[in-house]
Each structure stands twice: as C-alpha cells, then as structure tokens.
Image 1 (cartoon, one colour):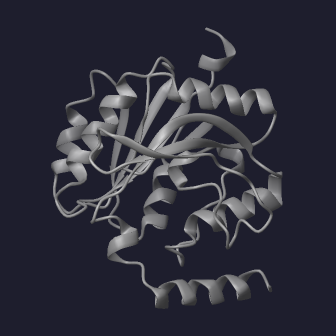
Image 2 (image 1 turned 90 degrees about the vertical axis):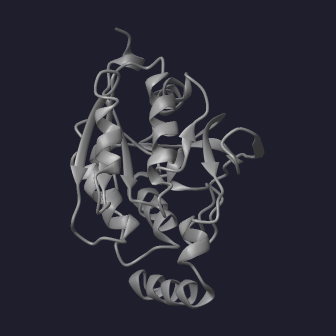
Length: 235
C-alpha cells in the first residue's frame, strides 16, 4: 500500500430529508464513492432525518462501503451542527466534507485531492469543482483562488470542496448558515495558513430548488450574519 492509500479518509456527509429528495441525492453520491480507486475510505453519515429512509439506504451499501450511519437528534435544521457531528464520529486522519446533494466527479477524485494535499505539505486543500442541475450534464467549471478576505469573499466554493487533516479541522460555527463555510476557511487560514489548491475538477455541486441557498437564505439573514462576524472577529 502506497502513501496515498495509507491514510484513512473519512467522507463526512451531513444529511436530512431535503424535501423527500435527500435519499435520492445521497444514493447517487454513495454510488460515486463506491467507484473510487482510493480504497481506504470511511463514509460517515450524520442524519437529521425524522424517518428511516437514509438509514435504509445506507444499509444497501454496507457490502461495498465502510459506512457509519449516526442519527443526530440535536440541533435539527442546522447544517453546521450536523457537519460537526459527522466529523466527531469520523475515524480518519483526513476529512473530506461532502454535502448530500453534491458528488464526486470521477473514480480518481479522492486520490487526486489526497495527492494534492500531501504533496503540498499544507494542512487543508480545496479542489476545483463544477456544477449540475440534473446530475448528468456538467456546467460552470470553477477554479478556486484563495484571498485573505475569504471571510466575506468566497473564492473557494462550497464545503464539499474541502479536505483537511482532522487535527486541524475548525468546528463549524453553529450560529452561521450562509457564512458557515467561509468562517471555517478563515479560521483554517488564521491557524494553519493558506490551503493547497487542486486545479483538477473532483467535485460536482448540485443546483436545485431545495438548496439551503434557495430555501433559508435571504438578505436579512446575510446582514445578521455579517454583523455577527464583525463582532466575532472585532472587525
């Protein structure tokens, strides 16, 4: 086993019903994970659902994936809290965050990002991504660029592009929704420096009507969180 397959990668997926589409999106994502050529993978599912649909789906993959399903009855509705719970149950040296409606593009996605992180000698890595509206056609490729004003200017993209050594993971601020990802990025920058940037597209972010962006985020929330961050960091 070479170095690139020696570190256990925990793919941390916070999930919920997502208006009855959550299980369908997660099944697509798990199928992509099962195709990976990186074999030392653990999948951690933190489940905010009130039914067994996600758990039943996870049971379908127990023969093909090292999968850990955990019901999370705390802070239901908070994606930040659910992501933190997934991380708390992860056993891997490396964490790969992946939201349930997003998915890995190709079988070398994990290997490519691990390679980029290890070869950089940095503590965290952001991968290039693209988008889809139907899970089939890939559109709008995005190349991440780091900037020191990452807190309010997200040039890295969604949490699904992140890979980080578990010991350096910055727990998501559960007071945040819209700025949850950039707040994590900002604290990673303050504590460990800039990320490695993997220019290969490895992750696909799904656009759909039931995204948190389209269901819970509005100008009032953004303004509130911006002021919260100004006070948090004494800006």
